[in-house]
Amino acid sequence: MEIRPEIAWLVLACAAVTALPRVLPLVALSRITLPGAVMAWLRHVPVGVLAALLAIEGISFTAAGYAGIAAALLLAVATRSLIGTVAAGVGAFWLLA
Image (tube, rainbow, N blue to C red):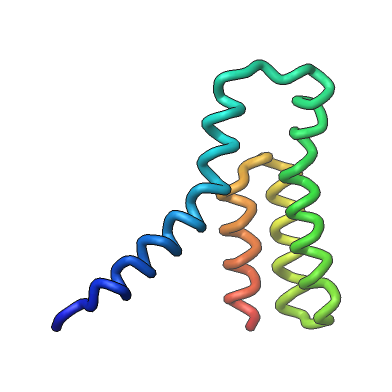
């Protein structure tokens, strides 16, 4: 199988466009100290993202969706583990879907 050069360049350009907006802020912010108010605000971002994702699923009105939401919220409150929360929500949804 032969890869045409223009396709290879296109794939590399897409990778760069995808990676740069994620990498540049991390590099820039790793070199400075953010004020306490900004750090306090940033602590709420994961909770906001989780709430938005759960709200979208809650609109679907399915038993599996509600089970996933309940499992995710219970585990999030109990453990504050992001991976555990996601695993519990997806697992509960998968078992009932």
